[in-house]
Amino acid sequence: MLRPLFFLLLFTPLLSSLRFGTIQVAPFTMRKDVCLLDNGKKECARNNAYEGFCVQLMKLMAKEMDTEYKIEIRKGPGKIRPNGKWDGLVQDLNESHIDVAIAPIPITSNRKELLDFSPSFYTSGISMMIKKPGPNGTIYSLNPYAPVTWIAIFVLEIMSIFTVIGLYCHMRLDISDREGRWRYYILVSFILVWVICNFSLLISILHHICTTAAVNSKAEPIEYFESVQEVVEQEEIKYGLQRGSLTEEMFKNSNESMYQEMMEVMEKNGEESFVDYYNHGIQKVRGDGKEEGNYIFILDDASNLYENAKMPCNTRKIGGKLMTYEFAVATKKGSDLSDRVYAAIESLKKSGEIEKIRRHWFEERALCGKGGLVRDQRSIFRRSQYAQMGEISAAESNASYIIYGMIGGIAMSILVAILISHVERKRMERPTKYTDEVTPMNA
Image 1 (tube, rainbow, N blue to C red):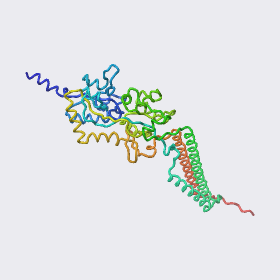
Image 2: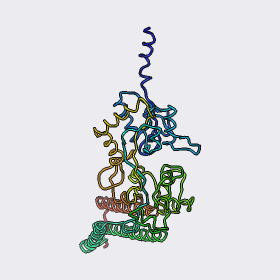
Image 3: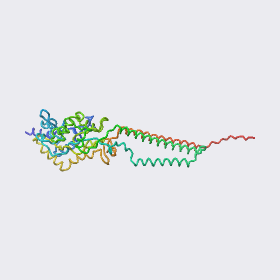
Image 4: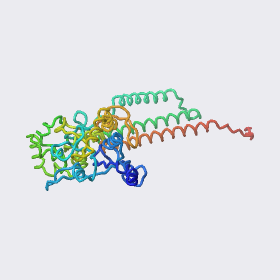
């Protein structure tokens, strides 16, 4: 009689391990960069290969429920197929392929008929993304130098002019003797450095003017929309969404006249409005060199906020949310786990743990914004106006080569001046040679 009980006690840890299903959507569940190529690394074993909002939530829930767990990646949150059956996480829960779904699953009336939901862990919705314009509607490259930089350049020019004049007036330039010759070489070297500095500065400014003119002649003005209504009323910039996404489903099922009108416009525009993948929509907003800034992407608000906080910091959200919905943890209808999951999420919300996770992934890790030091996976850098305004144009970035050339020319000129001065000083320090020969006197 004791053997079966002993067998059950031996395998209790295996029976208590739960299967947590999720989907890979940033920033909720993402595979770590170090685990994308090499799956054999120890740090990428099992659950350690993933990170994100939901991954941290899983750890806290497992601790709250006193259980082990395994992360299982699925294709989508679940929607009704043409044959009337569900797919994605909804299907996996109903067919017991997973025990708990911890993912950005919106609570809808259709899903409530099949699933039990916990209290919401995140309030999201649908919003619009557009590319940022430059300040005052112009390209940022029109203002390359701050006023302090121009003042410093002007002061240095005045100082260099007076220095050259002072050297010329106070040096004895009689090159017949060694001291005069040495001062002469110093003056020539200094003038050489001064000329190269001014010439390089002139080239840099001219190059920047030409670059700005070329970029501005090709760039089209980007409208600065502040509301969804402004987007709907204009026709210059196309807006669209991802095919087969939850966003498309909610637009089609909406009874709002404005959303129905927007859906009709998008279907009329066809491929100009729709994208097949989420990343394609983001890239279309940021521009591929052909349609830069001429597209507005309609997507989940959480993803919108997360992408806007990433480099190159050149996108922003338009207005508020078009629609609002809640994300919650789901279990199979009537499951024994439903009450435990509900209690765990309720406890984590009251303790403030879920709010800490939200701040970590949507605020603390943001790379765009005002001031402060930010940490990237590869480097630490200080946010600047360039980070706030977005990526610098490719044409303007070429000006860095001019700056490198200027610095190299100055360095070479200084080295030449030092070398000439050193050689001349060595020549002056040589002792004068005397001869023992007696010069005969003319009788």
